[in-house]
Image (tube, rainbow over all chains, first blue to last red; front, top):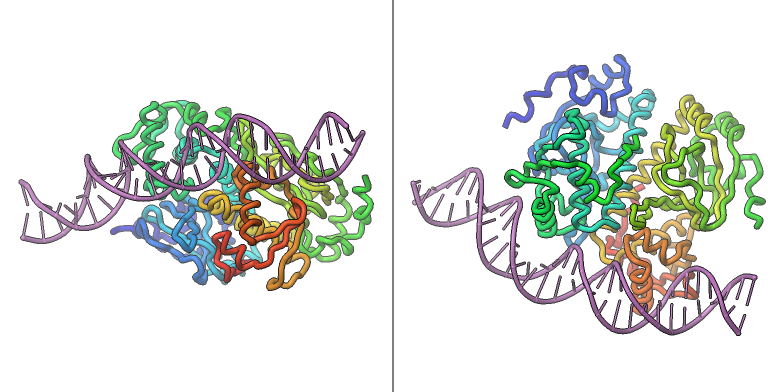
Length: 247
Length: 247
DNA sequence: CGAGCACTTGATCGCTTTCAATAGCTGTGG
DNA sequence: CCACAGCTATTGAAAGCGATCAAGTGCTCG
């Protein structure tokens, strides 16, 4: 596994998440202070990064790959409560104990900071705190959108919602034109999709098949998705297709 | 209606939410600046305070009463995505358009600030931004706990979860002993409970009746609830009854 | 007394879950 | 090279839970 390799440079200027992560608003001198305390960690797909209930010694940003936050009930029912993409932040300054399991959904690289030095730095660097506030508010919006999905949408709408969200942010990264067909690889297994959507994996499989049969999506293999008509998908998701991106 | 009356004093020191709201960490001089730009508004139960999609001219704190954030789909399905109690903050600095309907669930008093002056003040008053970050992180935790409720719990567990949350924070306000029976009034109609839990009001009614029949709760009238055994209720909610409060 | 509202209760329907079998793929070892 | 294990995903049949449709109750207020 050559997971490390491409990110063990120490210069933040080259960092792929430089302009979207918690450090986005930092000036050069502030960035230097962060560089002093940062270190990279790599994880393989499936690995648990943090166990719920464990002490949190570090915080950090997802540099590449995808991580998930999940809650588990005593009888084993699990619900994903966060999907962390590159630039997303892990951990909460001021908190000692992790409230959720954090897992690497794909191979993953994180830019980490030991918690204490990071908290100290945040205290004297308003740019970091400001950015963290913005990011947290965005996550809260995303969480609330998911509450609507979980509480009120049908299985078919849930699948369409998940696909449209993944498609949308893939597009926002790769600058794809929104009008043409959209192509991407699903970063989640059927089971992970089920955990995200509050469904069983069988229902996920059935609804993915149904959307395929109805021409809303097409599949090559199990994971490679093509969306011929994004507007159609958003209708299936129960969303307004004139979609206002509220940022 | 004498909704105003009790809060049109201008002195923040007497304010019931002084130590928990967005102003909690402010020093005397900072508080004076807030006092200069604040104003109170009262709303009657059922009134809509802000419509989704409308411009947001102000932000503010709930002083007394309860407000709710709800999302509505085109076909009328609605999901509550936030329940705002005294000291909770309404609005997002930097955002122009309201993403949710904000409604007064009970009679309500808010301490408002016009958005622009508040944003300016936040820029030069780290104590406000810091407190807002803490509060937003808390709301995110609450939202994620609700995602588990919405996605994975049964109707009975959902009702028990809602009751235990209301009971818990009623206790945190009124300093009730946790071991004895807990008594409170439901601030929500059956329909509002249904919108919170992603259920129909009929299912809410049935499950409340079932919990009553099984002795988990007792009712006087429709709204006055007694919980003889909080541990039992939390079992019914599917929560660990050794419940760590993860502040 | 009757209208309106919040709530309860009953009967039936249907979507999602559950249980179960099977397919397809990858990697390992005889 | 094929057999087989292990994993992910698909598909079918049946069961169950919550939604839907429909009355009916109890309370408040005019």
